[in-house]
Image (cartoon, rainbow, N blue to C red; front, top):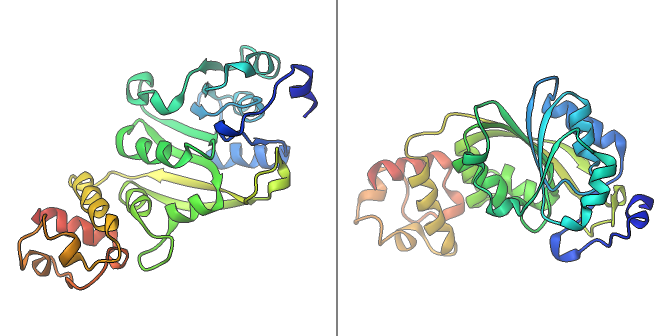
Amino acid sequence: MALLERHGVRLRKSLGQHFLTEPNVVRRIVEIAGVRSGSKVLEVGAGAGTLTRALADAGGDVIAYEVDAGLRPVLDETVGDRADVRFADAATVDFADELSGGGWALVANLPYNVGTPIVLDVLRHVPVIETIVVMLQREAVQRFAASPGSRDYGVPSVVVALHGRIEVVLRVAPHLFVPPPKVESSVALIERKTPHPLAETAIEIAGVAFGQRRKMIRSSLRDRFAPGVIERAGIEPTMRAEALSPTDYLRLAELA
């Protein structure tokens, strides 16, 4: 990308930097997120500012985090004062404290190395973010959207299902990034829903069960439930973690 070369910027693999260069995909992401005048938008991983500028040009009030301070001159050129660009590690930011009011959208081409934990943390702990539109490696998005019994189903699937409704809306080829990643990417739309009061307990139980996913739950959860309790939840104790639905984990949480 000539812009990066002009400012002498070298991308750092350790930061998972893959910058989207296809304007049509950028436009679609903004459309999917429904960004318009006055929309409150959080972006994580501003990169070269391509998406940041598009979100701001659509009318969004954008707060964009970027961990690589070496990109400051690039963002000064591409974004300028269109957005509030903050140079900090978003993985350490308490967004519940940083964002005021409700109605926020997280819209981002998330760095591959931190994307999954950021999405899960936002869903669990930042209710002011009501819409999430994120691009990640396709495998990560598949795990978010996976159904019980599938190979990709796990704790991330349970978290997403208990806190939102997910739709996989785009697939993005590697050659549309600089540098091209070795995997395909996907864009997911997650609309927040009001979680069950015991959602966190259910997620904790799922974490224990998936921590020993080859075991039957009567073994993996034996320290959490006395004999007979799992059956009282209407669940066969010889099942394994991946066979239980998010609703099953909620039923267990009610008896924990």
